[in-house]
Image (cartoon, helix red, strand yellow):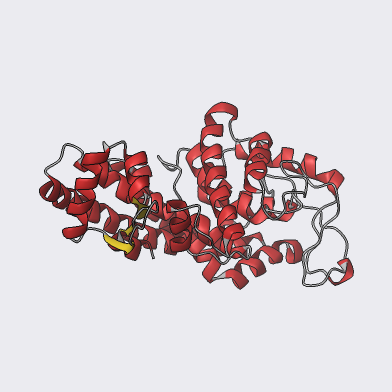
Length: 361
């Protein structure tokens, strides 16, 4: 099989009529989700577990097996031994790369330099760390179950073509397509088709999705979660992407992508609403239970850290130790949190905020 040569962007021949009926629905759901984000007092705090779940699911597509709870338990107690240490590190790197990307939009805009920086963080000290981390690939790669290129299901472009193709993609980031969600579908597919890195392309491509919509001001906060849909429709995801290189069928991919946006946005809206409602309920409850000036600090900590240790609570919440201890006792006895591992000696007690984790799923 010969290496594929992608089309230059913007696409010259695209049959908009084949998917135009889906554009309105997808945009309406994204607008509803963004309206919800804007109504939240601090979406970065409230939706922190959803952002971590996105990192878990995006990494799962690439073969990691760690669950959200396992990641949160590790963060609460990094010294605790776990057989999924390397999987968890990949997931934590995903979150770090996302944070870098958000800050990078202000510093260096949406560029290939930013993308290489995302890749550099994503593969830091994990699987693929020795595969030209932070730099475009220098070897020919192929996708398939066999190591033989002749048995590949897809062969990306030649290495020497990658810089030029990525430069064209960067220019397309700054182009204003007729519709930004359709443009995002094209951006994501083109990035995966170019396959600019030796490893980590899928995760970088999924990180780019919320970054692109935030860059284009479609979203007021860079929160956009699609990995759950891609993970549960993984085979179709790959087949629709393959249809572009096999049959130049961009329309079927864009239709798949817009459906994914519509369906998953509804799910995200439902979860975000439930989290917001839980926040309001627990705000009253915690104020009532603790009668403390630090009640809101404690509340915000719980929503960022649904599994945590007593020592982590003191350190990260910035609540004085004596007050923190009283608050934890009140929250435990009041049923807001519960102990999952009692502290012994120097080991702190570990708590879980179950109602929040049940919503995130």
